[in-house]
Image (cartoon, rainbow over all chains, first blue to last red; front, side):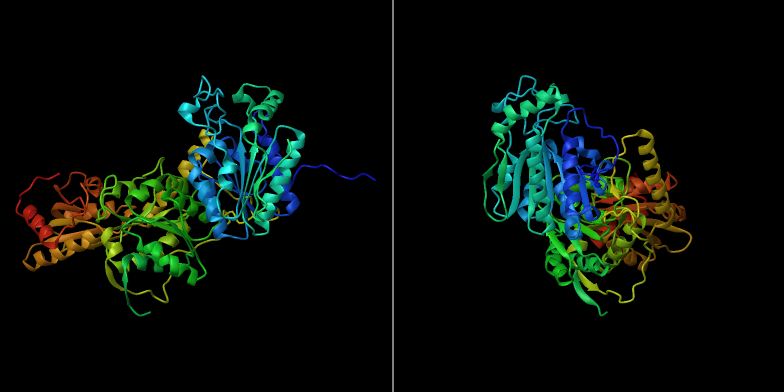
Length: 255
Length: 360
């Protein structure tokens, strides 16, 4: 008797993605799809895609989708969720989209306690436009618009979104995971599951920041890119749960 | 239903509810604050939802998300706020989402002032945002007509899957007039099922709904543009609306104005007609699609054309396109928030009739 223990998620379309080799977007897509499948919400889920590398996410998730203008996905999600509270609405945004041009929308959506789930992919760079400096770019990190490395005297320090959102009084689930190792991928899925589940239960806004790689624009092979996340990003962007609606805030995650 | 004295902004809010719209997302800006204020207490009474957004940018994207689910939704703002919404309006048009946007215009440019203006004509009718697109634009001249057009606007938006803008000057929003909401209003359009809306996808149902304006392939994007143009052609063929009051087949002066300015001109015209002067009036109600043909025909019957606007001359350009040099065109505009009085309008009309003043 054989048992099927691993299969293609129902919530993913069976097409090749446009993502670069070694990019962790594909894995994050899979995690989100698995969570949608496991919660049994595929037929009432609406995704909101950003501007950036994940702009074509509507081609990869087997759910209804809306494509938002740059940074505005949380506002679009607000409109969709307020119009149809029975839908499960999630945004999938990168760091240029969410932490730069869309900072106003994400802060206020979180502060209003919109019952949406935000998947925030932080790879410390603008990927789609060709590797420019992002608000999350690490100090001294070289990009096409910081060729000598990010000068914090000129550009300030990288913005820690999970920490920033977790300062808001409004109840929310805010956490940060990473995609740099199989163990962290498993932990990230658990964060996503909790985040979506809070929405299914009608509890609160939820945001999961996931440290991710950009081998192409970092100029690193995939394995070294994962090590770069672990060595450079994780110390600055600590992993863990920053806020829960139950109030047991700040639960650092083991490295 | 009995007539009720209502402020323009409140009548617009109530008209939206009568049209079955239960969702409003907006941001405060003078002189349209009475719309969100009215809806913030009225919508919860009818099981609706009022959300005060953090900016016009956000409000315009909230209506995108709500319209994407197929629900009726609207927002209102005033000139600088509409500029902030222009990116989203381009996306709404590109994604073919039905929404109603109310612009209670104030005087510009920049922060300008809070007094009435009509200087957003270009922005409203020629695009405003990026790309080839149009909103249907409806311009009421009374509070009653504003209420009626708002109800029509929701049906036009749904029917054409296109943003519809109500373009009122500050007076329309602020003045109080009797309004009647008919209990047996007949819909102007039959609306089909919204099978394009993101309501949750089931494997055995309609195709997956993707609300989107991104088409990376040049051929696909050109086809999309051609489809939009075909829709605008259909709108141009079927939705042109105007009011005309022409004194026969030959007369001396054709006056063209829209919104409350047309009402002022109408008063001035009546006074001059009583003195035996032959003056006609055309008032475009749809600014997009523009009544080029009606203006062209009427201009042929007149010796000259005189355009009034609360701007430096924006609709004037469409009048020139309609008249195509056949008759001399004169223009009188006020800016800064100044209104045109009936006496002022009459003076300008007489000036043209007496052959004074340069043509455009």
